[in-house]
Figure 1 (cartoon, rainbow, N blue to C red):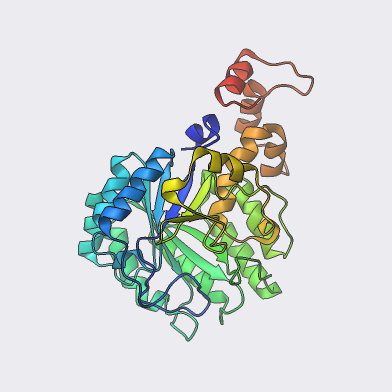
Figure 2: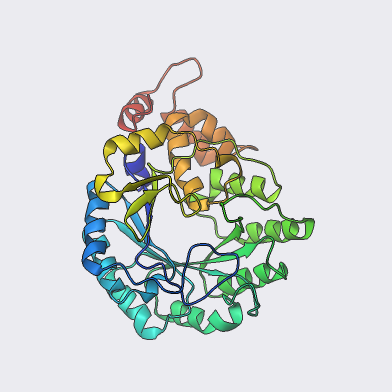
Length: 348
């Protein structure tokens, strides 16, 4: 996915699409659900998947609401995989059982994420470790897809130390772990308290490091945890799309209405426009998936500067070697490999 994104700068890297807005829970901080919407008809969901494939989308994550409420979710996942797109699922986990996990395996699911907000359910959130621990045991035993457990910190969470308990329990099962900072109803930052910041630092130190995490994304999170704005160019509407249950394309879950164009009328010209558009909400944005996809274009357009941001202390030895082999020298001289790489990745 990263290689294709480097070579082709005008297609969506990641899409979140909503098969049903209804949710079986009602977490008080969430503004992404209702308790009455019907599932999007399966034929319409499959048509939307076809349209995304036509735009060159590489990964499609099913979100909500609660996507497991869609009666033909497995058909939708299979259709994503038939287009050779990466298939992900964001769920609260409540509806998981052994049969559903095995059906997700057969459908070809690549990735599943559950956010767990606390150890015991409270008036803010029922997404608790106490309720979901059995689901985690089933996932560890039966899931053939990658599992990520996301803990959260921020206002509204009564016991910040719960996030550390959740992270440690997820690591027992060998799952990937992340920590998110709760945003307000417009996706903007709620700075962490000193106690929360200390817990965040400890969790970040335990977290499994992957390509998408060891680069600039970790700096996004570190800045947000300290209440510091990020200076970056948001590519939402181009490299990241949020497609709601009505089939409209939005910047993200917290900026619904912009640009608000029907997916069947979304064109490469729209991708190009939004690639360059400046979003006023970007500096204090907490939407991690949008941060992650921006990393690729940051490196594609400014590789030398990006490396210095990715590794502010010292470049690891393998990275120093690759930099010497592939990137042009400060004086403009290039190795043969650098010349080929620059042409291949369209970095100039």
